[in-house]
Image 1 (tube, each protein chain N blue to C red):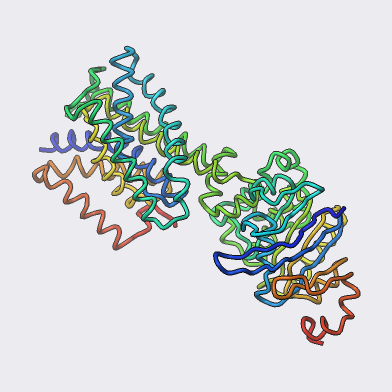
Image 2 (cartoon, chains in turn cyan, orange):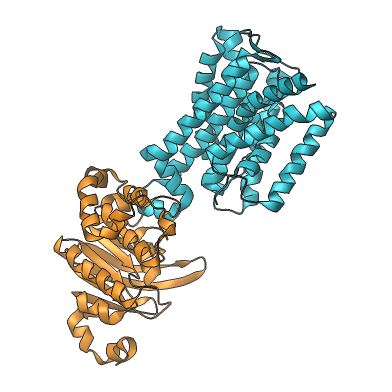
Length: 285
Length: 236
């Protein structure tokens, strides 16, 4: 029994890092421009397919492919921001919700037409790490490590570089930032690009160990909402910790009750945190 | 040619027109004050000159260049800097980061070190609190930071909206004294101030705004003797 719990828990926690990474993208965009990006799920799926295409068509190493996917994700984010988000940014929240939902539907439609909805997978394995009852496939371990690296990168970017600080300044007070000579529209586009990049990278990492369809981003988008609430919106470290908590729960719950109870527990927690501590467990705002 | 020429400016919020053709000009190196009762459009004027509000009509010319259609950040890069009403600090960022953001434009960034020394000498309090979150400081300290952040931007023209609002008289006085220092540095300033006595005392020139237009103007010293000004704004 203990072995089983340990093995399931370690599985969950390792996955939790990637959940955290996916959530970070959602959290960044919300934190900077109070936009809930409903195209988050399909972007994760596009990250999966991007990695898949580079791997199968170009014979590229999946991790190299993910680097390329990151760059493409950033650029795609700029385009999405310019086309659909920027002009409705100052409109009521419903407009940005609808605009990003429209992108969501368009991406899913195109994805379905091009890739159908049958599962694809990146046929790639690196063996696994064994430690007593715990067995972790190396691809998952690397994904977890990648998530930590990206978090450190994002945190350093936001806190120690000029463009990063400009992002925080615009998030904090857009008008004042503009008055100080910060081109706020460009900074917002950059933030949206980074958020999209994080989602695409998370998707790419997931694709190295799970099969996927164009709809596979959906569950991660939902998890991202739960994680953002757990970790507090707009805080990269909070998102990572929230991801770990959620992953841990997903590991623990099935050891004690049927797997179908996992979402019930997750979203029960979601509501509980919203009621008791709406700023998130680690959120300051 | 005036340093900054504001001509027949018309603007407002949505359907509500606030400015009805205001014309002002600022001379280089001079301190000018804009006086007027609440709601006559002083803040609206500053916001329009900075480009936060789009002018409906009229023009703004800076050093002979028409800047009426420039975005606020482009104006900041050109050297027009506003210390806004209510401070508008980056409250979640540290004092140091606020100053750093003040020096964001390429022009100001080059002079950042020298300007940091300058503002820390002027406001030693800020040097002590460099790593504190701006939002956690007292009102007076926040006002100092707002002015200091404006100075970090290497202003050619500094617009200050309500320097003394909500401050103790002693603190207000010391901030007014620092305006003298800024003038010696050659910074052109336009001050919007509810404390008319103090403002006129330090200014070279003054405009009185009423109903969205310039109602009176003249050298500050002369306006202080004007009966209407004394009755309406100085309460004498």
